[in-house]
Image (cartoon, rainbow, N blue to C red; front, side):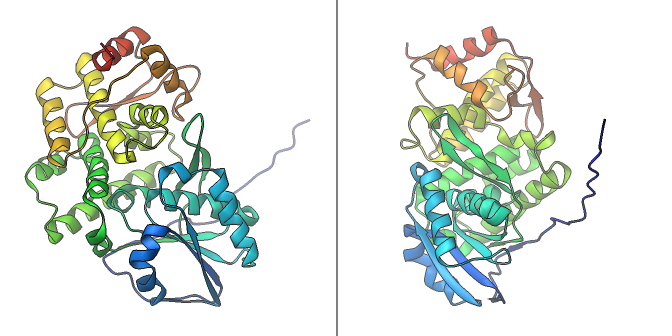
Length: 349
């Protein structure tokens, strides 16, 4: 006997990303802002002056990737219950990618899902993490292995928040911009080679371009079943680096920068990319003082960690590689021998 359960999608998850207009917002429901200690000290007063709600509470969590775990999620959820949030309540993620990922995840599981809004305050979250609905946390096996796709109701990006961002954090966000340029937009890459992002107009232009690229990709592939996977260029290697260093040595963007250098080496080995193109990417990363080297202590162990990557399936590792500049390849057909040959270039010799 077969009994079909026919489900027709009736909800529209579309939303708008507003750039450089934080606006004034009034809500007729309960609202809770989730932020971290650093952002709260710098910018919370500004945000609170722009929001009214039936009730408005603030949930402050520690600052750092090492807190992106179930313990922090439980803390956020406990506060949500204490504040008696209901299914019509709204969470606001006010911070960088860690805050956004955890707030979105908490929203996705609280009473089976409530709405949330993204107000990103770091370059990394403004150009990438706040758009697309990826939420989640890390565990001992790897990065973002627990989570859900849960789209925000809106995203408000104000580049003024970046003025207080430490240079290292700004540079880490730049790695995500390079990622998009290499895999999707050669003209953007050419622009970045000569651009000065300390210029506010150039910065806003770059942020807007990245958001448009991300929006176009997500609209074609919301659940990362195809082209959206290309946004993980550099991440397959970078996530292993983050896991090996317990998320404490490198910022996410820094690990991705190293991961891109490793991916480029593999792309060159396969003939997807020229050594000159790989050198251009490396120089662009170095322009913003991003790390471009890492010593792999155990090649076999590093390789085995690839199988925990979310994109891998059927005991095959899926690699995202550049195809020259502005294009990409997604492949699961690279032999272990070739991958380990490339890894040995980064080995502890």
